[in-house]
Length: 435
Image (tube, rainbow, N blue to C red; front, side, top):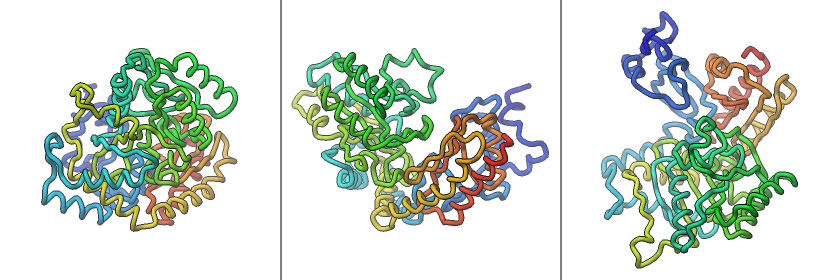
């Protein structure tokens, strides 16, 4: 069977008329994310979005339970963000950030600094979360080089962690990239220090390798793509104290947790922890345009402040500080200021906790947990992931479980009836056990 006839073109017979004209021919040439292209279930053609809903080409409407990989915190097509992007498009969609500066990124940097904890006060913009992590790692390595220390060239991160799909980010990730283990560089992976045994293992790694480590990297409070695993503020504070004790930098990867997802604007601040470097993306623009930021504290940025050219940070993404993306981010921050987003997160959290609780009694359920606007039902085993995803779609929802986890991360603005429908669908589908 040809590649055109298999995989992507295994769509249901007799439904070709339901495909838009741009779908079939174009899809044959697109490499889709996290997918075996030969056997993948064809993706759903989308016509438009609005609020918490996705309109498909065939007329179906899905309630989005995951806010487009956790980005659309205000819902889709929020008029305030749309208007800001349209205004900026008429003025200037983009101009390079080398040798030139413009309003939107400068305003955004100042606003982010005002929101972030401690002395995080120097913002480096890029286009994606993975790149923001790469920038953070590079900053940490050069911090030590500028200090005259070339032996600190490794990173310590944590079991179950995920930091992105670029090479350096993969090297410090314990999740998603097992097939490339052994070829990404020799980094250190520790259990999260949550009890005596894991704390002992963490301290042992530090004692053995502290003089090789540039920084400790952690997703604060929630490990997202590694399984929606939660840990307490005490664990994060323990890691900060250990970093200080051994003179190491601490990097908080808030690409998932930042901008209200855990119930506070930033998870590190919720735990009263100030990292040396923080990475941000996903909800930064309210799910409208690609943008990321790596934010350093004075301790880090001061190490680059010099009359010597070779101490400068030599990095510069082509679309760094993109005007459209920064306009969207500024509009998103307006909404956090003007509308009760964190109160809405608490309401979503309470509804998730109440509504998902019955899953605890279902066969095959290992755990039910909620933190902020994150609701998780962890299964002991999911036999057919694609079939389970299809069952959620058939029920009028877009819920995309992975591994052994069924989760909801809806928009903070989701209507009560849509949230209730998502929760009800999770309970009913898991009760069926037909997957």
